[in-house]
Image 1: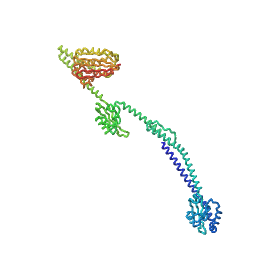
Image 2: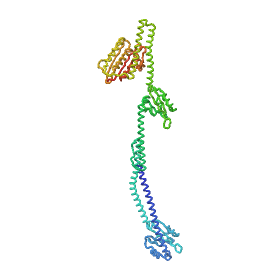
Image 3: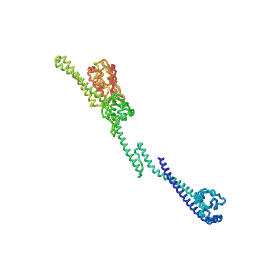
Image 4: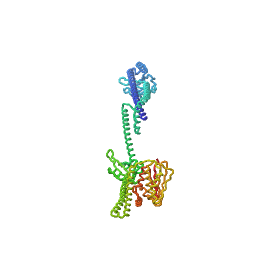
Length: 587
């Protein structure tokens, strides 16, 4: 803006200088013409007066009489007077001795006078050494031109006057420029300063400093412009605040949504993803934004539906399987993005991960099937043996006793199964209240081993108790912890061949208590390990039923451990035994 101020100042000063210069030239020319006109008239009158005085033959022909007459008419020598005959010879000159003067036949004013006109000429006089104005008029006798009278006067005074005027003009111009530069600088500053202020605010607005305002209180057009800029800045500040708030809300919603959201432009490029999509696709958002959806999503099925929505601008819902970074089942909603003109400009894709739901549905279906199958076996046995007894077998006391024992065992098995199902349901629904007390872990394990001791002895199994020192005391629910230990011991006894060994190990650190139950049993195949905590899942179904298990023990253990805020893991090799590890928080 400083350049503009300098340019404005120089322009105004230039215009002032040009106007003053033109006016000075005009007045100098007018003054010069006025002086020349006055001088011309003066010399013309003087020449005509002398011409009338010497036109008589007796005067013009006698040089002495001629000189006397001229002195009588023009006694002063302010004006140079020269009489010239028709041949150009000088007859008289009041400033120079006439016989010594050169012939004047080629003087322009003399030639004009010989034609009967008033001759006027301006030139440098070699005789006097400065510019002169010459005016010559003819001398007429009997209507014939017999010579000419020439009057001349120096132009030195006129030239000096004009030079003085130019000097004064230039001096005044210089003074005007100095004073004008100060005045114009102040004026240009008063004009430019509001513009600079407006420019500053406009530049701040472009840099998102919407709180900037123009501090000008003028009432003119610039003041109105400043007011408009301030209003615009205030409006932009409010709008950008609202936009920022909306963006923050949208960002907060998208960030905290468990469902994935993807926006694909009409060029089929991904323009926006939320963190849930990054988790589903296993790729950071900045790595897929801007890429084509077919290469970023790595799912042909998902890309196919996106293209369908883009091409047909239809809204629909589909279930999609993806296999990277891991297999998932997604419930996906596809909807075209319509702009304010009603044109489809992209696709909004919302992805819901229903893998767990589908897994739970399958588990529920399997659970119903397993429960039906497990209940049908004892019920079928009870029904079959009861019908056999009613048909006459009860008459045989030994047979009757055997059948009734089988019916009793199956009833007991059916009771345990229903009890375990009800217990598992209570645990899952958090309806099993926890009674937190201080529990001596080694004593609890010893008590649980005593309960299982008869079953272990029947199979000649040895059970190694954990070290009694140091004593481990922890705050937990005694009944839940005892049921966990009993179920793990029961599982170890059931699947360990005769003569095997079971080892219980405990360990404590600053934050956790670890309980390990290891056996030398048949082990678990690697492919079955992820599913052993499912309801009714059995590795060896025939042997499980023979052992009297319900298939719910490990599922109950898993949920009880989770209710106690712990974790359970398993390590096993087929034919070499199994180790269950329970980790509980030390409170």
